[in-house]
Length: 524
Image 1: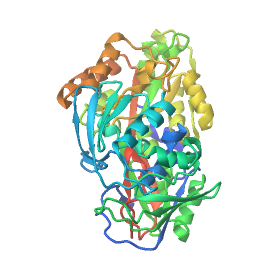
Image 2: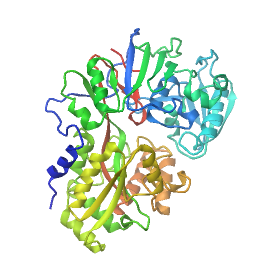
Image 3: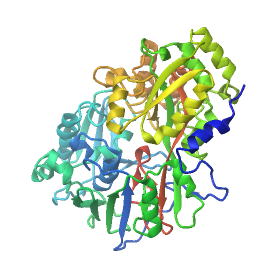
Image 4: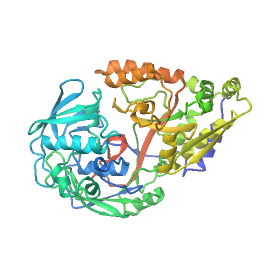
């Protein structure tokens, strides 16, 4: 029989501003406005949820979202991605060519001027690859996929990667891979000092000041090399407010132009307001429910995992997770991915309480089962729906709500039975299916795991990432996704959404990788 959704939704509503999508709701998308063509002397004010510990992730070995948003405005990358078409476009590199499976040669522009007045050269790219990305970030995505780099001449550089992955070039468009020079870093006192005072690079904006606990200010780079880019705002000021409602009120009052990273349900409540614009968009990531599959956990048993999946009300979870703006995840990839396959029918996704109970009885848990989940505050509503779903079949779920630091410790330590984690699947980066790649993390325990994988799974992951063409990659991805389904390694929940509230006169809301806001495209 089907679980009535109103009960689960009612539980979640107590934890959110509003679950109802207003009938007259108007929502803006991202990357949909024409590019700006006018400069002004105005200041853009963006309220982030928290203050970053650094604003140059590569130098600080720190990958905080807020820092990457700011560094995207400060630093150029070799290539950029058009987030409307998915095309990888020239930037500092005018062209590139794969020499073999692991070596790619980039031809650089000869007019990219750094903050110290010097032109960026191949030697600077070599410095970034070897002395910053590799040396300072050996165990994260910034550095772990490089083997080295060689300057072939003043404006030609060959980068050697440590793994085969054609989409590594696309990955170089991420804000993590901003380019600087050794002279700039040394003038600032080295990488650690530069992470706090990053007056360097060749980006659209330049660093002005950081008032700890208050704000970070950037100013437009009036000598930016790319004449096709026009920055409307002279200055950009980032402030930090953890209270989402306070961020929205600041937009209404005119004190702030953008309230970034609003909870989806809270943003949806403002969608019908005439006082602000609401922006809600997906960003290539689905939310997944992962099962701890080590022997000491009941979730290591296939029957238990299958029972949990049958108990889940996926429509209710989508409503809670996306306020109705997203969609049920019927596959591991998002629907706009070239690797998307619909794995489930509507009938397979229907709640089946009796079927779930029968599986638990067969597994020896007919008298009940106690499980734990770990998560941060922003996913409490989704966990509450899951908790209520499982209660209907005799499973008692304890939700441990923790802060970021404790979440990381528990996730990497495997201190849970269930965990909600989304994966960014916009490309075949080496990070793809990271939650099943134990070798990527020292000790073999990873967020979403530890997983019990097989040689077949490991081999398919490698083939997907290394495939030279999308058709082959899609075939292998389908094979892997069917294994994930048959072995119930993961339950696919809903498409993750990002949301902001912005002032009514603002246009040009753009996003970059993982849905981060592009502060450089906004205008009036």
